[in-house]
Length: 581
Figure 1 (cartoon, rainbow, N blue to C red):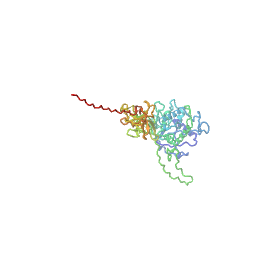
Figure 2 (cartoon, rainbow, N blue to C red):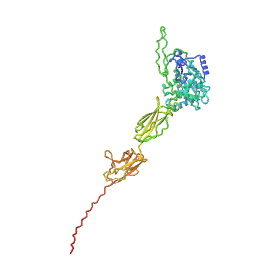
Figure 3 (tube, rainbow, N blue to C red):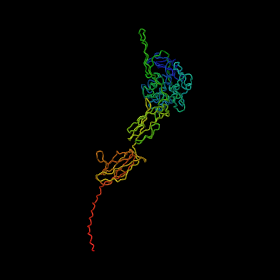
Figure 4 (cartoon, rainbow, N blue to C red):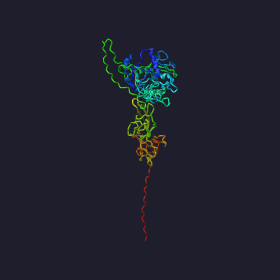
């Protein structure tokens, strides 16, 4: 774009002839007349701040620094003198906003809040710009669809008192195939509309003369470059990107503050058209420009002091160059929002991989998918869960469909909850947080590995150990937590405080163990079991994570007494009788 125009508000009264000529020019062009140049703060002399309009820079301004209305809001609010709040439900047309215009501003605020909530766009800012740019679409003269009729066009930006911007749209929007003109209620130049145009009323067209389309486009433009319009500095920068004039900023700020205190709805077509347009400044020797980031500006060195013998003031030092205000990034490249791309519940058993992967989608300021956005995924928690490759944090760029999917999650060995956080964007990053759960390893079956009877004498330990094996869906279930409890019933409802017991690390009797875990082969060999002095049959219940259980019988009884064996008395040896011959 071509030349930057510095403007200032008209100071003091104008003659009737000048005012009449300005209004006539406005009516002829269907848009505000040309703008005044910014002068030093408090200066009433247009020459004190004039500059060569042919060499000024308008690059990045939504309106091409086209003319605007300089009328200021009333000094007091419409309810009673001196009041600054509690505006009435009805009042003067000057304080009111036509119904369709107000609806468009408020709809734009709601839409932007959905796609870019961190911008915090207030509809009152759109109302202030709409007031200054077109007098609220010439007092609300729009049709039932919100389209200005007749259309609103600014003067040709031909370098004659304005910026020089040659035609960029073949006259499609502004009807001028030679030079561009600002178009519509929010006064977009065609080249800016080509990047930021919206279809907010759903008619399939992006029409700068439609108040709904133009308001949403203005809202997205003001939010560009990650601005937070609740911050004064960001709001000033946004307004200056719309029209690079500190007086324009002051005028918009005045109406913004006025509408924030309250307003009311009036019928379409009944609004008051402003009467004080800005006008171009004659071409004179330029003075140092205030930076757009410092709207107040400071006056340059003045003329020689009176009575100084005709001496002139010292040669002013050239101003220190200041970086230009960055161009707003077109909405197709502007990061708007980050959303869940269909990630389901994140649950896995300890040591296993998660079936679900975290996926997000980035959208631009228009709500369309945005590619090549870096998204950083981070695991936070104490379960030991990591991304594939053993990483707690990974960065993935979004694809053509705007989605980025994190690598597979591998659950740690500790059961519990953790979070996965996705962060994208700079300046005001967007964040999504997903809750995830690691459950303990499970078994759906557990059984003894042998069928030996387990018997011990009172006060003795059981000679044979108890060994069990856990499985899950027929496969070995290693690392499964097992609880062993001495119980009185097979359901394990009532614990037993008598009979067999284990020993803790201090050698004291305990009848429940909760720190047992199956080995890699799914087997568990219980610690030694001891019998107290109570004889009888007792039950030991083993329960796995997952609910599988087995009941083992333990018998305590004294060994049976065995009677001593009787020794047989040998029969006496008989002497054989003599046989008589």
